[in-house]
Image: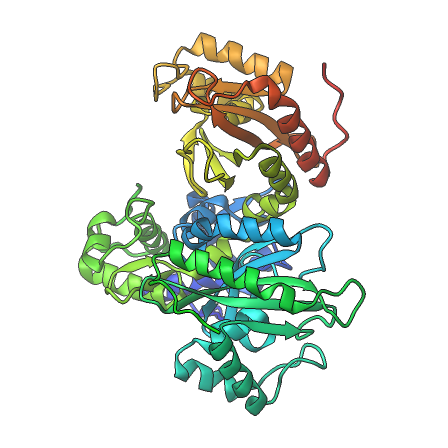
Length: 266
Length: 266
C-alpha cells in the first residue's frame, strides 16, 4: 500500500489526491468493510482528515456506509471503473468465446491483462465442480506464477521481461519456476508455440492452459486460460486435449477485437 | 454531471476531491477517450489545474494514457471498484445461477441493483442470437422503464416509491408506463406475484421477466431478468414459459446470499 498522508497537514492538490488514494487503498479483498478509525489508521491519516475525506467520498458514492456504520467501496466507483477499456469493454467482447469454452470444457475459464509485473483477472467463469481457483475478478498474481501470466510476460516489452527475470521470483509451490534461465526458456517456448501449459505453479492440484489474445495492432493485449485438475492428481486432465480449444477461443476473441488474421502455427 | 471546479482556485480538500470527481465524471460510455483539453472543458477546470490532477490520477492508475495521447479510465480504478460488495461480490455469487438460466433459455440474462431512482446493471449475459439489449454492464436505466427496475422499485422503501411516482416518468416507447396510478397498481402486482413481466417498455421488440433477489435480512438487494423477443413480434416468446425459471434462479441466488428460506407463493 502506498500512503502519502503520514499525518502531516501538507497543502496542495497532490497531497489531497494522494490521501484520497490512500483511503481507497485501505480496502482490499480481505478488508472490504472498514470503520472510520480503521480507514484513518490504514491510510496513515489523522481521524479528523479521514472523517472529512471519507464524507466527501461517500457523498459522491465512491464509498458507501452500511447499516453497521462501516464503510465499503461504493457502486459508483465500480461504475466509473467499468469504463476502463481493459476491463468491461474487453470482457464484453470476449464473453461469447469464454462462454463457449466454459460450456465445452465445464472447467474454469479466465481472462487476464498485464499491469506492470502482474496479471489482473478481468473475467473468471468458475464451474462449481471444477478445481478450486485462487484467482478472483479484479485480483492479481505475479506473471511468472500462472499460465495467463506466462503468456502476458512472454509477449511483454523486453524491459518488462528483463525486470521480472531479475527477480525475485517467488515460489508458490515446489513447481513454481524461480530460476531465471529456466523461465527465459519457458517464455521462448510460449512465444514459439502460442500457448503456455503450467502444471502446479500456484496450486499443485491445478493445471492451466493459456493462449494470447491480440488487439488491433496485433500486439498481445490479454491472455485466456482454462484451469483444470493436474494430470498428476485425481481426475486429472491431459493438457493436450485442451490446447486446440483454448487457442481457438483466443483467436476468436482476437478477431472480435479487430486483430489481423493470425498466422497459422504448426 | 456535477462539477465543483468552475475555474476559481478555492482552497480546501473538498474542492480538490470535487475536482477529482468531476474529472472522472467527464468520462462516460460515449466518451471513453478524452484529451486533456476535453477533460478540462467537461470538468469546468482550467487546463493547468486539469493537467496537474490528471497527472496525479494517471500516476496512481485511475486514468491511463493511450498511444494516441488521450486518456481513458484506468484498470486500477476498476480493480478498486470491484471491491464494491454490490458489484463483483454479488455477481460472483449469482453467476452459477445466471449461467444456468442463460444456458436454459439461450436468451439475455441480467442482474441489477438499485441506486437512487435507477437500476444499475452489474451483470449481463447477452446471447448472440437473442434480442438486442439496450443495457450494458455498469449502465443505468430509470426504475419505471424496465423489468428489473419495476422489481427494485416495488420492493424499495416507500419514500423512494413515492418520489419516483411523483415523476416525471419518461416515456421510452408508447408502452412505457407514465401514469403514476397505473404504475402504483403494477408495483402492487409485482409485490403480490413476486415477478414483473414488462412488454415493450424500453424497446417494443423486447419483453422482460424479472424477479427479486433477497439478501441476508430478507430485503430485496437485486433483481434478475431474462429479456426475450416480445410475443407481439416475430420469434416472440410467451412470458409464462419463463416465469418459473426466472423465479427459481432468483431464489437460488437469494439462498446463496444467505436469505431466509422464501415463503411458497401461489
